[in-house]
Image (cartoon, rainbow, N blue to C red; front, side):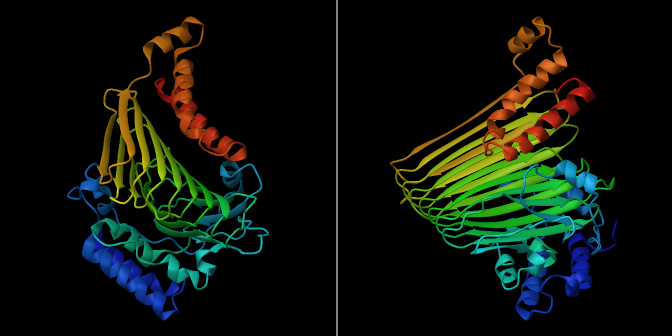
Length: 437
């Protein structure tokens, strides 16, 4: 362990690396990064004293000495092929937190579209590094702003549609990797984005720290899929901030099936009327994995609707966390906000902390939330065994059906097949290991 306190050690790593980070020669960028690392030093890591971090602690991060990754690196073509979308895409691959041009294929883009690695994004870098808010809750995003080595910038002008998905693939390494994404869709633009965080193959634990700023313009449509499948010993922290314009549609699917400790925190705000958000999440936890979905949804304007469905399959000593906060502002009349959390605990020591929070300040709304926790239905299991299906296979089929409601939120076709293949692979692997899942 480093002799220096955790924050000072990372500040030292920043000083040693700042000159090689994107935009280092731009005075405004350099000043922003300097202010960000100072904010992180002042704030420290979030801890249990913060209500939103009540169930997830980061002490394990402080017990390790984190280095920043080397500038070079490449991905094994076999590993890339096994984890990439089986369809033509605008693909950006990151290894060691850096853009791997040889493994990427951005391809031709329509007029009015910009898609580039953050390290080559020019003036957009300043927007991407903008502060994510105030308070101790943003300390990880400030650390990210200071150390972000790369990421993706996707900008679509009004009316521009991408006919192929944007695929962002990051391979975890045994170091601290900071990726930062900026996604902005103009009015009536359309795109599909897949963020995929994969096991890089190293045995040592790494820490991936991601920040994404997403803006969906008026009448635009964004389908945003997120798949976290990092090494079982890895740490993963992600914060996303999304604004949804008038008449826009935002579909988000988050699947977490990797890492020892992972948290995906999403803040969504409606900024225009008649907009809709459909947000779904799936946790697959085994061993001693701790996987957290935390969502804050702000209905700030009238006539908007949101639908949340989060499901959890937890085995062994696994621990899942779901926090779903919804705030309906006084002026947000005719809001329709629905939230449901469902969990299957497959072992005695498996656990879930689920915390819905509704703050309704308008009087003409439809809002509801619900949560259920249980095991695989014994009668359904008996019925399948009575027809000759082995118990492990029967449980896998029942769990597959449980998970599919979230998987089916992905667009039909190659993207849904991709997510489904990961989920089915996870269920099959764990059935073989323990005979429980």
